[in-house]
Length: 157
Image (cartoon, helix red, strand yellow):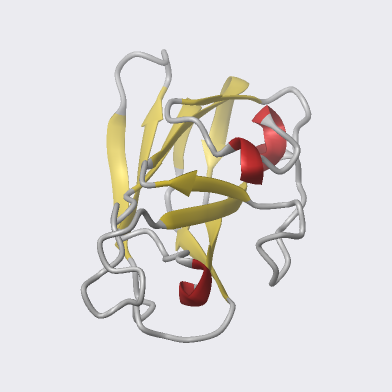
């Protein structure tokens, strides 16, 4: 983990679930199986859209980002996660999309890392986009209410 990385988050995380603030997604600390533990950033009804600036061109082999699900707390996995790279920070190329493999009705506290492997590309910037479902599904006790996605750590190798 390079401490010189910078991160820019388009849609603000909730002040209630801010973890350690701006650098929480790149601070090297993985979230535990408790969304109240202080490592998770929560996004209510908005998508996670974060761009990491490595500060220099970096060879990328794999990229991961962790998410948490606890449907009793209205926290769902993102519908999908997309990864983009750029050398100039203006022109981004999509390098992968991962659909959520976790059943939306699965009970319990679930951590899932969405990982894109075998990249072998170089970039200075990485954009991670995670699609929030927005509202709780019809079958959920909070049907129609705002739901959350909780993210912890962007890992780049």
